Amino acid sequence: MIVGVGALGCPCADLLARAGVGRLTLIDRDVVDVTNLHRQTLYTDADAGSNRPKAIAAAERLRAVNPDIEIHPVVADLNANDADEILEREKHGKPDILIDGADNFETRYILNDLSVKHTIPYLYAGAIGTRGMATVFIPPESPCLRCLFPEPPTPGSQPTCESVGVFSPVSSIIASYQASEALKVLMGHESRAMRSLLEFDLWEGQRRRIDLSGSRDPSCPCCARRDFEFLERDEEDTVSICGKDAIQVNPRVRERLDLHQILAALSVHGEFSHLGVLVKGTLKDEPYTLSVFHDGRAIIEGVSEPALARSIYDRYIGS
Ligand SMILES: [Zn+2]
Image 1 (cartoon, rainbow, N blue to C red):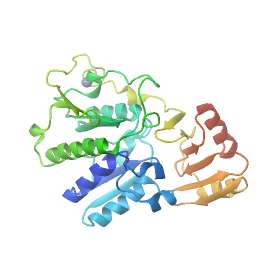
Image 2: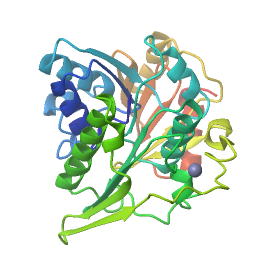
Image 3: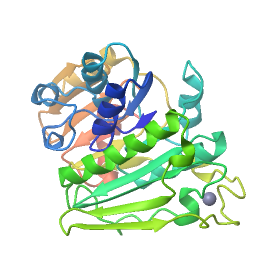
Image 4: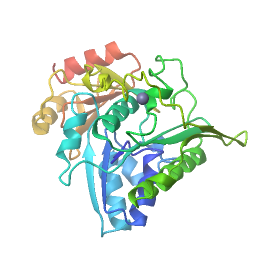
């Protein structure tokens, strides 16, 4: 299961599909944007032009690469409310590996909780600017993410792909490392998986390896006390989307929307189209672009203030 089919998820999914990994579940909440194309290697200019959901565009590309494997695209946000449910819904049982292609720390801590709770190896990774890091957590023996970093960084304390961008070769290197570790685990060679945190800075030509053996924290809230607080938290009301001037607004009640009804309602306010699992368009009186998904989420472009995004949502989609 690959969570986030962006700069890391694209090259990793591509390598795994070509290697013949039998089943890939691709989870992504966003649509392809032209600013993604330098690093998100499964997408084309046409995907960006038609605002295709990444999970669906990636699945189509990978099916063309290898028609003999099973690919399951999921257009959704892996959040505290439904992370367990998304795992349980997998028709062949829980995934063998969780691969981190996320662009935010909240999702990584949810993945870590899932990994420890369900004893599934978790391939942690991140790439930002010209730097990237990755490691493999294999419960129950290895440390977990929270043994190393007990809490996510405070918002605003770390660079984001919005503030510094992503140098595309670094995400491809980190994704290749993830694919390599995934193949070892899937082939039953868990003992060969790296027990260290690898860090690269391609601009400076630096590489660092931190040995993680012995770094399990006996008082870790997650793997020692089994307190899965990131799965139990209330979902954030709004989330910034990395790499674009946009905010995702989550619905107050999770229920499937009737997109035909949403299209009819929004068409009064601008040019909107129904694009499969979403309705997208730009308002005529305000400088905002809205993508409303069937699960009730909306991504509002042209806004950086969460409160303003929420008020636009309430005004045009309803609360
Ligand atoms: Zn731990």
